[in-house]
Image 1 (tube, rainbow, N blue to C red):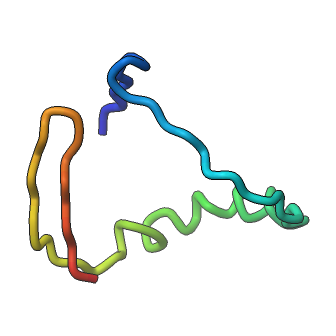
Image 2 (cartoon, helix red, strand yellow):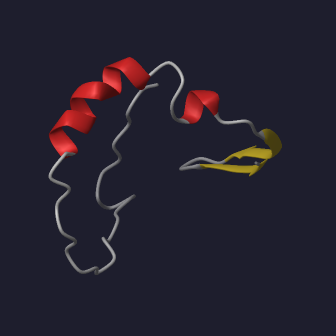
Length: 66
């Protein structure tokens, strides 16, 4: 997958305000263990059906059924 960044005149985002949560003390060991889980954890193991696929000039509109 290729990352494409458009100029700020075309695309921009705003982060929604939120309160800071407490940090997970085990977050670093979770990140280190991610390499062992990468084959069967996440989007590659998600079961879905694409209902609509509509590529547009600046984005792609995709509707799926989980």
